[in-house]
Length: 436
Ligand code: S3P
Image 1 (cartoon, rainbow, N blue to C red):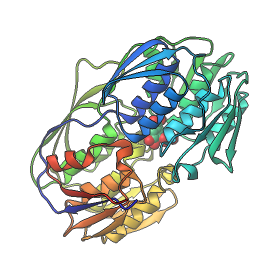
Image 2 (cartoon, helix red, strand yellow):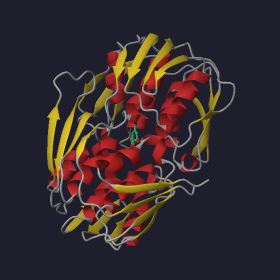
Image 3 (cartoon, protein in one colour):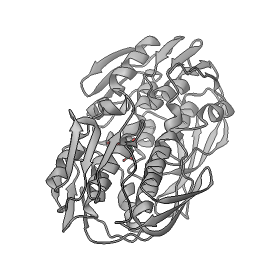
């Protein structure tokens, strides 16, 4: 709780780096690998706390997972009906993805399950997933709409036609996972396209998934076959360094082997809109997920109206967009982003408070913010235990007038183990203090 970062001003960000594996894809590799037939070898796995919570849960349901090294594992899947009841409750830690995807997967099992989380996760909405799963026939109860979530097994699920009320890949994925076990087709229409890692991975595991515009569908009764999965570097982690390099006074940064799935690259489009000097080099030999290299040089960022249609494609990068806006010339308006209030923290109010603590003029809106660009003073930020808030301020703090202290940073380990040493290697003057 009392862990913190202190960042001193610095000018240069340079070098060649790779970031840890993609969090979304790592969760899915464990879950889908666990219910596929045979072995799924996963390389580039993210050994962050969120994915380790999923790993422990899958293991506790009887799936054997070999760990060859920190980032290479083999999941010995037992088929769609191979999971068995865990001996106790399943602890999802800080991870909304783990909890929501497991709700879909476990709704169709022959046994009961209880999913619980940490203080932050226990505040997040779960009825958005429970409601359509109940329409499919699942027995699910939440605690006033939040975790803990109890799932009664042994239900027969029916496919569903469902217009999703929110653009959420977690919701879509939960319903697709339940749909694997359902009678008939599951047909989902998204209000806006969201990340499609589940669909891509199901296809790699041999199960057809169809997309027609914003509608995605699959039929129940198929089966998955184990395969090799290469997890690319997480663009959501790389984005902190993309921003650091944009804000730098000198240097050039190269980030290799990063995921470039077009449902994730909204942050690159937003930074380009703001004037970033950014080169994207797609790799020729990408597998199910596009990968490539990013080359970033310093630039003078300009304020922008962020197009609301880019919000779902950059949903985890808004803490960075807020910091970019605060250090850009002119005004930036973020709108259509009310979902940010349901992340690991209420990212609109926590970012607004942090920007104000560093002397930035900002107006909070129900679905975003209006940010007047300026410069950061020295100061102290409370990240409220939100990993992405902590890392976004850490990179922005390099350009502050004096030292910046960021509090409550332990959860950086949920998505980006090694952040501090990689940031220091790239040129940030960052120190971590661990408290107990
Ligand atoms: C994720 C989807 C996003 C994102 C989260 C990971 C996923 O949530 O914020 O970090 O892996 O499906 P929503 O789809 O609910 O916006």
